[in-house]
Amino acid sequence: MTIRALILAAGRGERMRPLSDTTPKPLLEVRGRPLIEWHLLALARAGVREVVVNTAWLEELIVAALGDGGRFGVALRYSLEGRNHGGALETAGGIATALPLLVDTMDDCFWLVSADIYAPGFDFDPGRAAAFAAGDDLARLWLVPNPPYHPQGDFALAADGRVTRSAAARPFTYANIALCRPALVEGVSAGQHAALGPLLFAAADAGRLGGEVLRGEWHNVGTPQDLAALSQPG
Image (cartoon, rainbow, N blue to C red; front, side):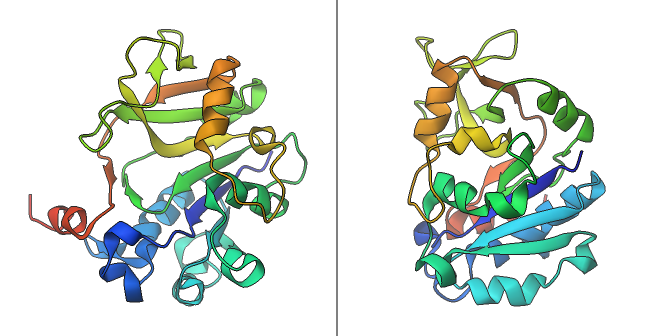
């Protein structure tokens, strides 16, 4: 079974302006390396050899910087939302549009990660991918304790690893790393604008969302201040 990955890199990065006016957010450097390269290297370490990157804003710069992926140990293909659809399609729309590059059959699974998070030690573990593929969940999410910018959270996590929305408190936020099935975006057409959040909430309500807490360093790099903080020594 071939598990591919989709790196979400299409966004405009409004909160990262003015830096993102001339440099696409995934190419902004953290600790000496563009954000997206940390993911490519981590995927290669885990044995993921085929990666799709969706692009829109300044997409030609991303393609020029990453090329065919060979120097990172992966084969890259691009879902060019800017060229083909006039702009970014949001997350669910981006996934649905990239599916022909991501899966060979609708039973296949894939990794999903946002280019603008920094989690250099994350393990795209093939064992976890195989276990997910053997089940019937629509997605498996990695979660972090609610950060200051999202205090209300997204989900609760039961002791058996089920991700829910029904608890009185929602102490966890989706960390923008997941394993997914194509059926998660069933009903979203290629080229359609559609958000992922409502589909994840529906999957949780249907009892088809698993998850675990992400251990190790994780940062959502959303603003120039976030970027600067990561550049500080220590």
